[in-house]
Image 1 (tube, one colour):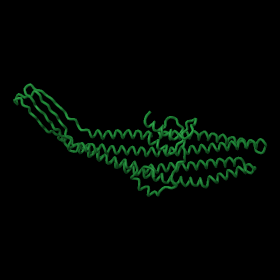
Image 2 (cartoon, one colour; image 1 turned 45 degrees about the vertical axis):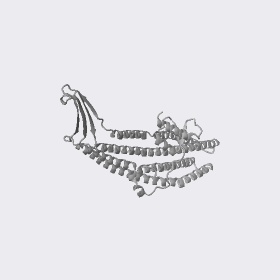
Image 3 (cartoon, helix red, strand yellow; image 1 turned 135 degrees about the vertical axis):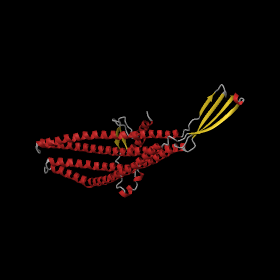
Image 4 (cartoon, one colour; image 1 turned 180 degrees about the vertical axis):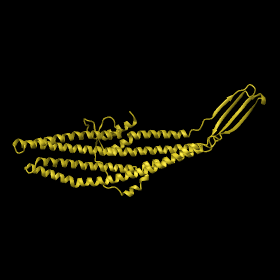
Length: 406
């Protein structure tokens, strides 16, 4: 089993240690549990960390110094034994420039991982809110089905004793069938939302994930201008800025590689009859002349990549600014809607449903009015849940634009 899978299994075991086992292997988790699991085992993060390992290795590769070369020879008319060692001399800054470029690329890859975590965190929070919403809708549908079952029994009894028309029994039964279908659909939506959350947590073994708590978001957002001033700290912007620095470091590397590479050659000639069998020692310094290859095309390419990176910085700023603005006003709209529904509309719908039920019991309201009042109450509850989930999703988008929790 891979380490990430082990970590997720350990986390889920800790989450469920204090809860009784469920026949369907249901696991209730908090948002913090979901984020912790995503931080360990989100598929995109696993890939990003693997790329980090490659970048670390590239820095080590850049530090490698070329090997010396050895040569040996023999001759019948001159030295019987000759030897040569050639030592590369990378002393004009080429090796340092290569290492600096590798480190700059490594820094960009590390920020790629941060961007991946920023994306995974947003997706996990949105998936958690979607699962919480699906569970709330399923609860509302089941409660509505229970009410409809009780109402159907009551109407059938009234029809039996002749205090209600036969058509009322048909109407209430049709409504009961519709509500039952809604229950089945809501249950399927819960399973789908749990699977989506498990995808970001790295859970792929069929566990039925369920939320333990409501997604908590602030009552109100800070001023938009205050948030806009922090966009340069966003992970996507910082990643593109790092790529600008990496492109400049690569251009500096190419310019440094124009400098001549040198080699020190040391040798000896022994048992040479032309030199009275004395040993002769040799030393030579060689260097390549940058006559045909000035690496100008390589430098131009890296500078062009730097221009591309600077354009991406501007594009990233524009994108996160647009995302922030959209998320901010979506959050404000969802907040206003949720407060109105929870504080005014839902209590009014509940009171109307109760009054209509009492009027129907006294024969002062038709069954259609009662069914409509019950349906309105359920849909109002669902709308309030949707507004709360929309607030959580918008806040996750806002944090994503700014690069982290606020």
